[in-house]
Length: 441
Image (cartoon, rainbow, N blue to C red; front, side):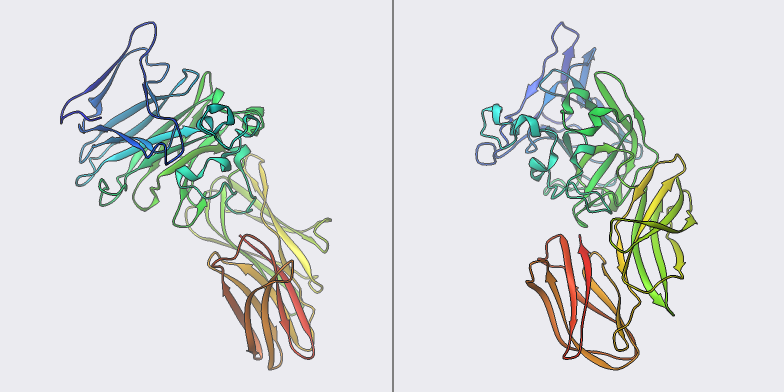
């Protein structure tokens, strides 16, 4: 439906029962190709609420049912009072302080597990007991995973509310030339969080995250200025400022203690005259106190190698180094990061070994986001066939007759079409076989 320019949609919540608009909640594209509610009036009062405004006036419980607000080059505070099936309202607020440049529309949508329940009558695939699991209904938001940013845990859904929001400034045909900078305010209905979600078990801190579909990651940008307020029947996350190249369409709210407060961009170990030199780099830090490096030979029993003081709060690259003088046999190293408030978080382990075989050794192996790499040190000139195999022995990459000269040599394979998991680099010739495990994210 659409109204002409400068017309207003006025919703009267002053009565005993608030009115609400319903879109087709069927998530199946064949049955519900999508519907726009077009607000062709750029003023903030183009949707006007009268009265208490408590139970929610827009029930768009499918991602493809959208509000397209033709805001254009206008500033103001724009509110959409969403509501769920239990008549709980949870407004979404967009504050545009400076009028954006040029024409463009904001496209909004939100949805939860509800249309996907087996009991919904739409043949959904989500059992009520699994409604906490966002991976079962994430695809309609354009989200491909709910992994933790750095650890690669396969499903962090228990640490996210059971809802996605779409806030799109780049929808085809209505896109801004550059996404404007805005401040967002999210509310969520507490009864949207289902049993099985650890947030329901006592988490009192949430913050907003958007899914970077260019990097295929959550958490590459944090919004440290945001504030949380708990309560009943809704909780809120406000003062979330985003714009330009950091603006992506899919959002959710997550446990503040679970998404990483430190954006770790690399962690590697190099052999240095029998010692292991450990190096790591962060892109951003928020309230970090110190790093602890731990070591293990069996991935079960860990000892502390040392600690390094962290930068605290930083938006610039920080480089850290720690040397393990007891390098030698193949060992595993991991980082434990501790915040100023005492919260701790482990990062993935890496493997490093400084024992040599006929002058040649694998120093380290790592995933850099684009390629999976193996670094080889040699004191002689030698030729090896290099393979990347999975744990079933299937070859995922192969380079024959690689020449390793005296010094350091890196061999890389693109990650294209290689699934997340543990793989093994093998260097083989007629005299020796060298192997090193590597985790691909």
